[in-house]
Structures are given as C-alpha cells and as structure tokens.
Length: 181
View 1 (tube, rainbow, N blue to C red):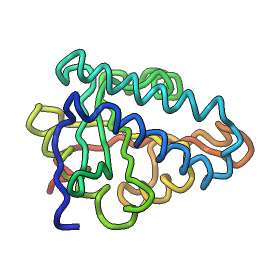
View 2 (cartoon, helix red, strand yellow):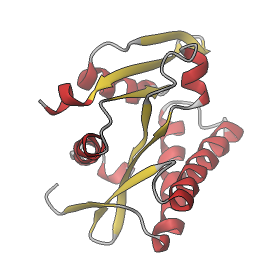
View 3 (cartoon, helix red, strand yellow):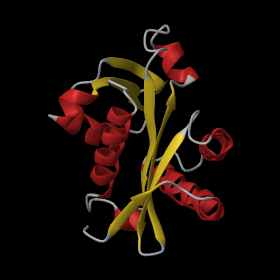
View 4 (cartoon, rainbow, N blue to C red):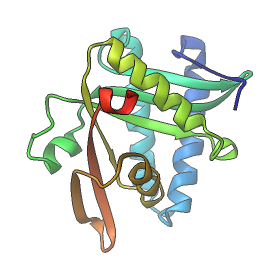
C-alpha cells in the first residue's frame, strides 16, 4: 500500500492503540482456534499495553514502537525492546543480550497488503541506526510462524508442543545487516 505512513506513536494515539491491540489479538486468538482462552487473551492485551506505556515513560528507551496509518486509521504496529522472560526461559538466557522485535500487528482488514513488510523495513533501519546488529523474534501463533518461516527460514529454536500438543513456540536470531543486504 502506497499511502501508508509509518511513525512513532503520540499520546493522542494511546486509546486507539489499546483498541487496535484488542482487535488484532482477539482476531488472532479466534483464527488460531483459541478464542475461548479469555484469560490468556487478556494477558496478551495487557502485556502490549504495558509495552506501550514503557515506550512513553522511557521516551523509547525501554520499548520503541512504530505505527502504520492509512489516513487517520491505525492499521499496524511493531516494537522492539529487551528480550522477554519467555525467550530468556526458553533459550536458557542465550539471547538475553539481544533486543526482541515484537508486536508486529496488522489490522485484520489490512492483512496481506504489505503493511507488515513496510513496518519491518522501517524497524530494520531503526535498529541499524541505533547500532543494533542482531535481534530475535518469537512466535507461538501457527499462522504467524508460517509467515516468519518464509521470511527468515527455519527457526533457531523450536520448542515442540510448548503450548500444548502440536502447538509449538519458535524463536529466530536475525542479523540486521543480512536482512538489509
């Protein structure tokens, strides 16, 4: 999409971002067949809201968000920050010194239109400009795992049946310069 604007979020975007997180996470849970896991869904939404609060409180130092807009409509988000407890636990702290890219969300009505790729491209440049040479990315959603596998190849960590029978968790280590070349 050509008319998409990617920028840092502003205070006046917060309420819309909270609604956006709820829409995308609810849609993802339903598509993954886990829409009945309401407590987990609420925890995921709360985690993303907390990440956003950390971004504003730290001026982008603890978490750093970018958002995608189609006109005035919020259609995507991405952020980076310290590696999550989950990744540290799953890798026995092997990635603790890296940054994690996450909250790569695209509104359900805008998926498969290249917005996620635009957000990623902007994030790669942001990481490079910050002197960050390597990051990690994880996923427990099978639909997202297929997308990431096409983009990044086989994951560096496969945690078989982590979320239950047949529900794996995967983690990639990615070098920024390899992506940008």
